[in-house]
Length: 156
Image (cartoon, rainbow, N blue to C red; front, side, top):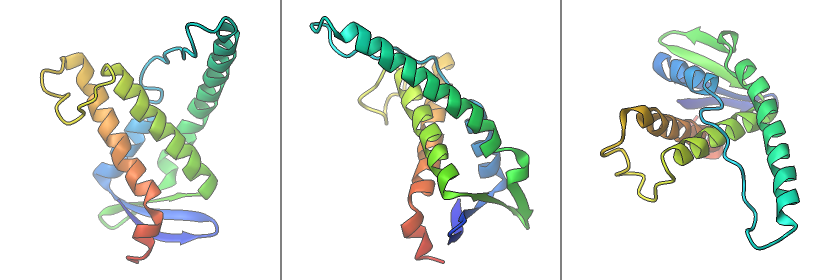
């Protein structure tokens, strides 16, 4: 994945056909895991109400992202150019894409049991959990390329 153009309307990326397919499949999976409730404090008696409000707000935000996710990677967003796919995204939609990719990474990490050692967590990983390992790393790959706009823009 490579940034090929950046202007006031947004960014244009060149992806291999496999990268384009992977990005579409990954974002189409959102949300990848069940949202775990947030716990604020066990000792604060008022925390229960704040936790409830926070979890409701997070669920609402997640639902809005889900509604936007399909439109971000619909097939019409990708144009064939030789052996590559060109993907254009506005700055605003790029921020939404980054939120979705970050949620996928965090949800996947949680589904894996919140491992500290990410490099070795795939060893002895149950078959039903491997998809989360894959999602976590794929989301990180795309986040890196969407965030590294300044570094790539100098290469053009």
